[in-house]
Amino acid sequence: MDECDDDLSGLIRARATRYSAPSQLRARIARITEARTPGTIDSPPGAKMALPVRAWRRWINMGAAFAVGAVASVAVMLVLHGGVDEDRLAQAVIDSHVRSLMSAHLVDVESSDRHTVKPWFSGKLDYAPPVKDLAAEGAPLAGGRLDYVGQRAVAALVYRLGRHTINVFVWPVAGESPGEAMFTVHKGFNVAHWDKDGMQFWAVSDANATEMRNFVRLLARKELP
Image (cartoon, rainbow, N blue to C red; front, top):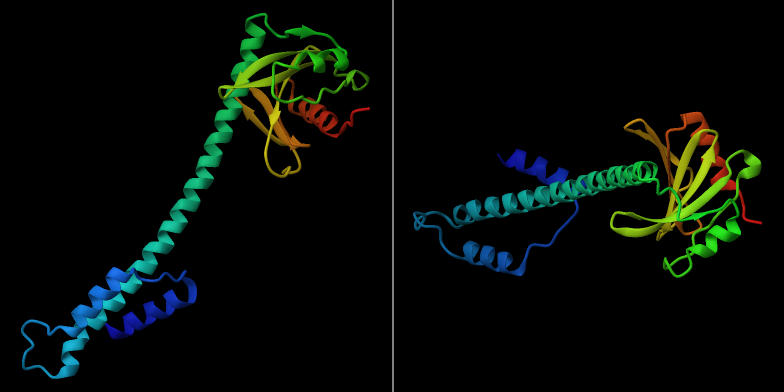
């Protein structure tokens, strides 16, 4: 038993995060070690300490193992929670995309001129969405509208790509931009999202994957004049 305890203690010391025992626990252990164990009145002094010392070591081992397991569980939960949030956002933008096509409410301001579309959002949002014109690249701006994603008012920019409609939802995001756009397929729709210049973009369309990637590449890289 002592060899197993020693092996486990060595493993804990080498790999586990160290935590200090609460003062109440230390005081309680001290009282136990100072008191005589019932049934050992005639036992030699060394025998009185054996059980409390083993108990103390088992408490340390169990506490450290529990702490490591708790940290790992929290990390997994955070990762899963992030995935769930991303899936919910994807579903939310798809729902908004479909509603805009079915309700004949695709745009609130119909214009291919970004200088007309961008000012329209002034006073309706607490931020100014970047509006780009991709007509020269084959994806003209059709207009914009006020929409809601996750109970938040956001800017929705509408582009035409041949016979396809692309909704681009834009709202502010905190933190650094993660880099390249991420592409997924949800219920037959191609969805892309990326961050740039303090804004988060979600693009949704039934255009094929190649067309969607080309569009996002152009939109994400094109600089405003």
